[in-house]
Image (cartoon, rainbow over all chains, first blue to last red; front, side, top):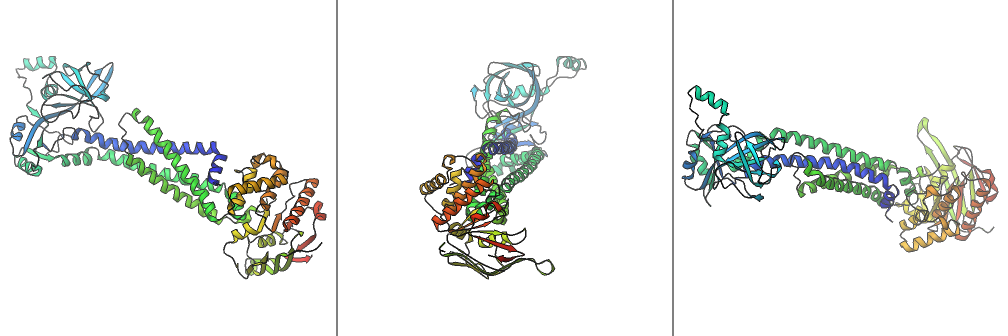
Length: 377
Length: 230
């Protein structure tokens, strides 16, 4: 006879409500884990997308994400001729706001040279950029659809394809345009401002600088050697892919990451206390019954089993409800919620440990109960 | 009445709580013998030591000194002679409480069969024995009902069934009729006597209920921790 299950069935409504409450708490914990992962994943998405080996940026900067970087476009030709480099491409990054369907979209515009590194990794829908100008590939989160047009700066661009998971560290969805369009977007003046400039006799010159040059190495080529060679040019710096990722995590998103990490820690502590309190209270409510069981001859293992099984069932139910809820609602969060099976397993292990520790408190109280308590009124 | 085996033998049992100025002598050198088939009542004012003696016989409380033999087995002689006192209670002693103390999450039948489950009976045998006892006690029709839905009398009969389930030879009852009216209290005591005779068990009852005094073979008076007369 399983006393734990019998007791749960006896107060099923209350137990289910408790599990649901715990499940909601687990949903928040899992959401925070997902948001934390999402923040890191989003921050790295833009760095990982070009599948670069080396980032050539302006000397003395940690560009192009942690700091502004401007290098001549001609740097790409110099880099591509260096030993070990298979291909190289110039890229440009900027944030713009644009109106679409009555809404203001905040977009992360990535300018790249079609056919060279720096473009989207995979097209999820439509095609990649085929024309030299005024075509863009947008992240699905922008809400743009293939065939639609959107005005960026002075020009209207046609959406030709969609990608997924392309955004900057702030979570702004990315759009890919050609490098020349991106450079124009960065430097072209409003017509009225252009007329003022012309009246002053100033000549409008398109900027010939880009944020970075991305290099991919030939198989077996030495990345560190290339980086060291590039650094010998006093006006350039070189970062390997690993260094670029480390810069992003340690500087760009570090504060947010630590903030969420700390909050997650507090949330887990609160959850542990809540679980402990629930299990302890559940046990304390049963002390008279436990005394009766002891009096009629129930061994300790029966009483320990009653408490521990209920604690584990409570924890497992709360975890399961939390997991189902977060998987159901995660796509409605404004920022990405990334949950790996590993995260859910780690949380399950933590909850199991908390439940066992909490039930140890209950077991301790139960072991102290004098069977004589059951006698009398 | 022919006396059967000695089931309870308490010799020179004393129990004190505290030491020095705070010492309270709850029992002072008590000797008591109860035979199979006997139904005795322990009487006395509050604080006279009735419950202390019941707890000592039930192996819930260790005496300060003395000797206790239950069903021929010495269980205390200056110290407990068995480690597994709960198993001893399970096998030899049945308890009947004033407040029934049925487990609220089990049905009437499960409240009886849980004892047999703990004693290692096969589940089917346990259920059958529980049902048989409940039918015998005329509460079989309430077997699937939880204690909260049983009347006071029904709950008391289920509690009796639980106490008798594992066929113990010693039945200890603490105010078993306190919650019952006179007629029903008499019926419960008659029933206990009948079962005691059938199972060759003895029944030791703590009671203040004068209505049932005539149902006992012996009245044992306790006063200030001593047996006044037997």
